[in-house]
Length: 242
Ligand SMILES: Nc1ncnc2c1ncn2[C@@H]1O[C@H](COP(=O)(O)OP(=O)(O)OP(=O)(O)O)[C@@H](O)[C@H]1O
Ligand SMILES: [Mg+2]
Image (cartoon, rainbow, N blue to C red; front, side, top):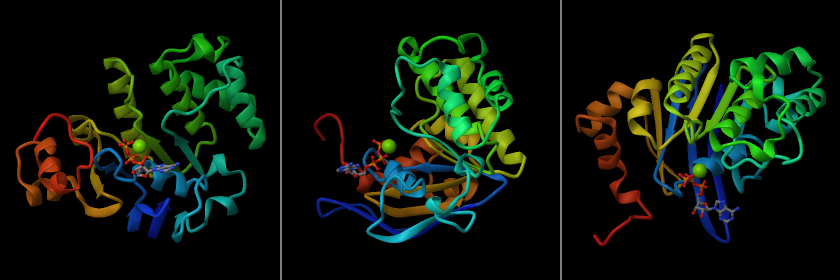
């Protein structure tokens, strides 16, 4: 379970996350939605101890990230635009993380197979395509077989086969009783994947509802329409002259 309690994070006086509270429960995929700049990645970084909150807290299974022993075995995460060591192979990228968390080579091999990267394992990540990098990020998230998974825009760059694969993977992980929190801007995809939605805008909570209740509350025949209806007043970056 992930618990966000009155979380606030400010950058230069601007609240990127503003008194945000919600829970991502085990056994379901929770879609974490919001317009560009809403504070999704900032929230995720706070959960992972990469950003220190100005107020409130973010807990994984009741503990702060910094208090977790062998953290990869408790929470796995795919972050936005994650840096890879370009000269390292996919295998060594994973092995290095596995070793630092007391995990063996068999876990590296298992996650390479799970993400379809077995044949690319000995290639340096320098030459990886966007989709391959995403798969490697998912592989790293799965390494410790964690109860909690946090995926920031995992569908980015995946080919159609990959989109179906990540959708089915997230559903299976949730069906196994894990907590899965996933951010995405792809509403049609979220409608197929998430059972529960947490929507934020300008750092604040806008909705925390099961998918069907969200649709009923916000009208629209598609999730995209319902989302745009709800977040209309929270969009900071809008294209075109309107
Ligand atoms: N390191 C940082 N320094 C300064 N401002 C930041 C930093 N990180 C995020 N912000 C600001 O915080 C706000 C929230 O950004 P965040 O990246 O969390 O949004 P997001 O919901 O993940 O957006 P997107 O959908 O575009 O990924 C934005 O206004 C952003 O400019
Ligand atoms: Mg983001």
